[in-house]
Length: 230
Ligand SMILES: *Cc1c(COP(=O)(O)O)cnc(C)c1O
Image (cartoon, rainbow, N blue to C red):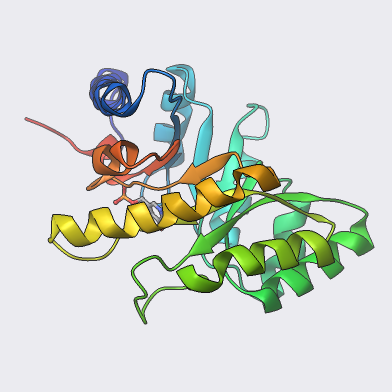
């Protein structure tokens, strides 16, 4: 559904305000970046949000990212890849020059990605995805191995430019468990700061204020942006 500029402005304003309130609760020094997840929406809405000042957008399929990046080529949008990357899509992703690949979820993928980057003489900014609630349905590194693996990737795969961590909050209505998954990820991030980590990407439509209160400095929001309120 295509929203009017006013509708998108209202949604964006409301979200920015909620981010602001949560950020101040955590720390006046915390700066939080908003990545608009455009996977469910039309290109027209991306364009309108761009006109409203939004620059960072996220997609979870390489195919869709490619279509949109090409359609909006003339706009200096910072594209984020936030979904699972299949190895047969690695080259395509590299060629799209995304600002950040947020879902580096295994050593196997790191190895393959590094190899392809090397062949193209390129580097890629990446986040390590953490399976912070240890859910079998989710990808990512287990919390207890994350730090060690982060260092391993840094050391062995020099074309991968690790910038920090990403997680999806626990899939539950229990606020305590969601909080725990964010706190677990934040602790890993904190330990990796001395290794150059500067991004802790956590929080989606349902839980971004909680994520920010737990220290997130990058939220990925889709549905809330494209809601139509009567
Ligand atoms: C879809 C998605 C989001 C956005 O989710 P919403 O609930 O629409 O805000 C954020 N992160 C990832 C990894 C996603 O796949």
